[in-house]
Length: 238
Ligand code: MN
Image: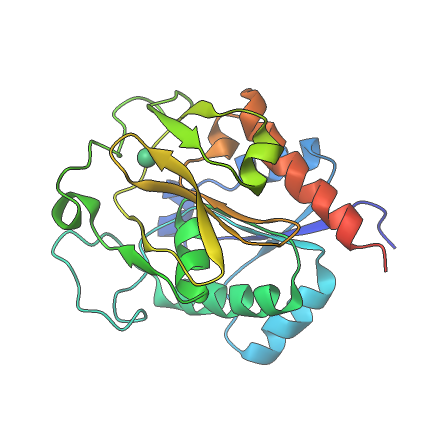
């Protein structure tokens, strides 16, 4: 048996996505936080999803493209980006099962959106059109640099980060619009865009809109990965 908590990282698997959404930073951060990373490609049947959850102690929903509006039961906005429905369906299914099983979850960027939709919330398909007073959330600086501040609200997240405000990078044009029932907002940008959500009462079930894996030298980034791995060690004592 592995002694380290096993963290399943959902990933893109087609070449086009691999070029845009690198995996190595997630792997690096989970290893550095004391976890054992395994990569989960899109899975196409529910039975496999259940078996996959038996292999892992925690779930990391990684960044990536937009969620297909069709999969969400919505009409497409004009500025929707690249979608991969097979990945959407697989991650939504895994997340719903993981929520039911109550295993620790960390959602990053696209991952917070998957978490929100899986739990019954809703997202802005395109912030600029659907929330016009927002500022620019798609940074023009390289991804390792912070782009805007985020206020951390009273929450599980503030216990993990031990900071009331942090500078984060921002590489999204979508965001959580409606927080799922049983969840709360834990981080907000200055324009009112939701930058973090968490499941109320859970040991560790968080989503953040920024990319901590791209800023591994920031204390608040590693705090998130360590928080996930620690929650798995705690949860895994059966
Ligand atoms: Mn942002």
